[in-house]
Image (tube, rainbow, N blue to C red; front, side, top):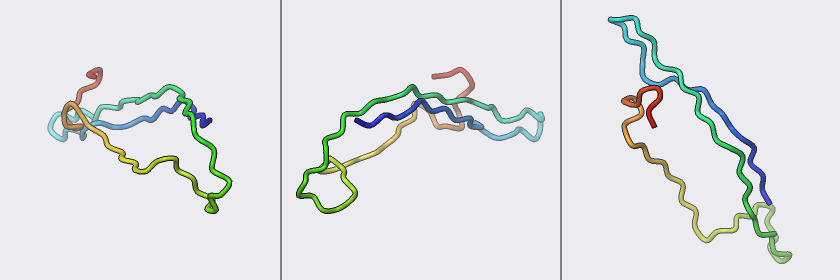
Length: 74
């Protein structure tokens, strides 16, 4: 079992507007704790690293371009 603790990160969205002096928006992103079931490494597997997958793809997608998202939007 793999326990991933809750995470939070503070990010700055957009840029400071030089004409109006309005600063970029600050946003806190939060993720709750997650628990993953992980298979044990087989005894005959010699390497230290063990990833239970034939293939792993990680991706992200945005409903809008990140610099167009406003504080409070989801």
